[in-house]
Length: 223
Length: 338
Image (cartoon, rainbow over all chains, first blue to last red; front, side):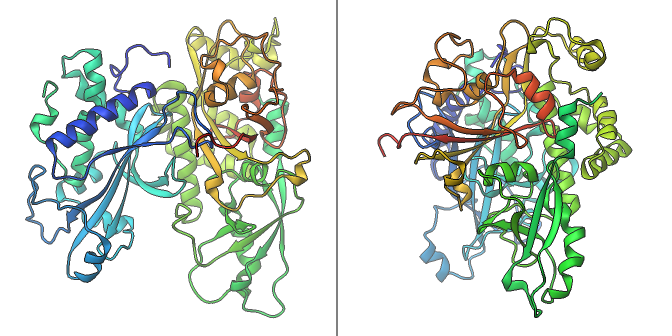
C-alpha cells in the first residue's frame, strides 16, 4: 500500500487489519464478557500450503442470540444480559419450540477493494433454518430499519463470502471510508492508537443496525 | 477509440449446447438441446429470454428461476460467461455442454438471481468497486445519469462496443497509458485518449488496477490440458479479489509481476514488487519441490506470455466492469504441516 496516512482518509491498511482485529476482540472480551467471543480465523493457509508470513483471515463471532422483536415498544439498551444469552446447543433449541430467538453469526472481513472492514452475517431461527432477507429486516430494531431505509451508505445485500465461497448477507462497504473519516476526525489520537481504535469505532456504528450498542468504556480510546 | 484486442474481446462468444435437466422434462420425447452463442462478456441468466421459450413446453408447472450447471457444478451467474468457460474447461470444449434448470434454485450455493435486474445490479456494483479501486471513490459511477446508466448496461448486454466506450469514457476510469509497453512514441491516433486521461490524473502516483483472480490449485501434475482434473465444488477454487498496484513511472511492470503481487505467498523472494529482474526467467518458474508452478494462465480465452506489460493486458483484456479477470491453474506442493 502506498498511502502513509493510514486511517486519516477513513480507510484501514490491509496490513493493519489484523492488529485492529486483535485490539477489537480483546476489548470486546473485556467489556462484553457475557457475549460470545470474537475469534480470528486464520486463512493464511487457504491456498493449500504454508504462507510465507502473510497474514490472511477474518474475525468471527457465532451464535449471538437475539430475542425476536415481539412489539414495537421493545427497548434496546447497551449490551446487557437481557439482550442476549449464552449460545444454545441445537438440542435445547429443538425442544423449546416456543422460543422466539434468532442466532446470528457475524464475520468481519477486510475488503481489499474498499480498504475497509466489511460485516458479513447470517441468521438462523430457533429451528436452525437460515433466515431470508425479509425475515432479517423484519426483525431488526425499528430504529435500524429506519437507518437502513434512510441512509444510502448502509444497505443489506447478499454477496459471496470472500473466504467461504457461499452467499452471506453483508452491509455494502462503498460508503464506509467516508463516514469513518468523519468519525475518526473527532478523535485526537496517535496513528497507532487509531489503528487499534478503528474497528471499535466502526462497530459502534455498524452494530447499531442490529441494535448492538457498545459500552461507553469500550468506545473510549483510552479505556 | 477501441483497440483491435478490445473488439476481439467484445465479439468473443462461446458456443453452448444447453440441455434441460432430466428432472424438469415432462414431455416425450425430451426436448432437444438448445444451441446458443453466448457472448464472453455476458452473463448466463441473460440467455433466459432465448432459452425459456425453447424449453417452456417441457417444464412442469411452477415458477421459473433459471440456473445453470456444468458437470454437477452450479455456475455462478455473476461471473462473466467467458471467465466461467476459461476456468472450468482447461481444454476448451466446443460446444460447451451445460445443463439448464428452471426449478430448485440452489440458494445456499448461489446468490439469488431475479433475472436481468439482478445481473444489472451486480454489474453496476462491480463497476462501482472498480471505480473505488481506481479513484478511491465510487462517485463517478453513483452520479451517472439514469439514461447513461441504462445505455451503458444495454451496451454491455448487447455487445455494442462503440456505445460502451462513449458512455464509459465519461466515468474517467482510464487506468494507464501505454507508456509502460516500452514504446518510445505511442502513436498519437491510437493513444490520444489514454494519454489525456493519465495526464489528468497525475502520473506520478501508483495505479491501482481492479483484478479478480480465480485460482485453482491442483496437486497432481499434468502435461496435457486434456488431463487436467475437473473440479466439482467451488471450494476447490480460491477467489482472490485484490487490486494490483504499480507505479506509473520507472520500472517495466509485467503480467508476471502482477501475479506475484497478488500471490506473494508463491514468491517468497519478491514480497516487494521491486524484484531482482535477473534472478528468474519470466514465465518459467523453477520446477522444484517447494515452488508452485503456473500450469495455465488464461485471460479472455488466451494464454498471454508472462513477460508482456501488465498495462497492455489491462487496457485490452479487461471486462466491461473494468475488472481484469484472470484464471490461473497452479500446481502446488502438498500442504505443509497438514
